[in-house]
Length: 244
Ligand SMILES: [Zn+2]
Ligand SMILES: [Zn+2]
Image 1 (cartoon, rainbow, N blue to C red):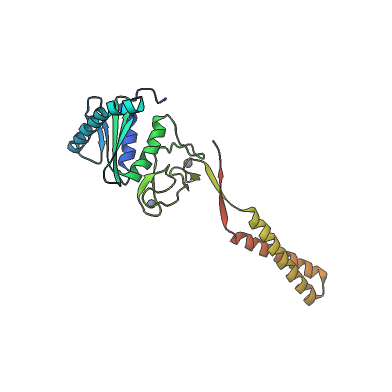
Image 2 (cartoon, rainbow, N blue to C red):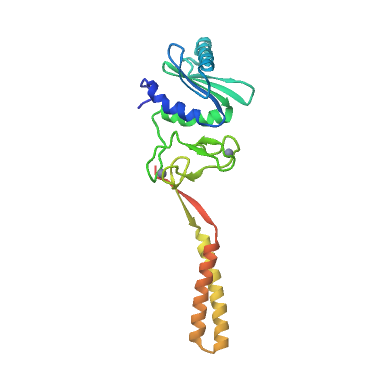
């Protein structure tokens, strides 16, 4: 669906559900062409009606001023409530989407909505699930946030890599697969340490038994064992496989 096509109210239902499920979003209202709240989340109808009236007021009263300044009709208005909270009024063809709440939560919530409006999707590279409007519980603060958020809008935790809510695969916020593997330096270090241990134990075994066969055997077995243990203890690194 291109962004130029008229969007039905049905198109917005999952968007409203998504916005309404986010922590930090206090209100999400879809206003009709006539200025009525057709869909609203987290508030009652009365509040949604007041919001709808405000949104219409703002889009009409500011549009002539902004039109002159911008040279085109404005696509939206952001009202800063108190520096921390905002009301984002976005005109989408004949409809108006209003989202009120914490600035960071509203902004993080509107990013995937913009993708949807542009006809784009974020899909899990492993199972193909559309995760554009999926939510995710921040493992650090427990708040419900958009899956597509790279950092938590509430506690700033880095959440670039996480598990797909559908298949459990380790993926990035953009859906790319991530594999955990040992770095090259890990295996080199393990071989060196294994080698040193092997030579040491081998020499000791040779000294005690007087047999080069026993010495060689003990040396290679301990070398391999130490190498394996060292390798296993090495930290893994996360590598993003770009699939797009
Ligand atoms: Zn998946
Ligand atoms: Zn958090």
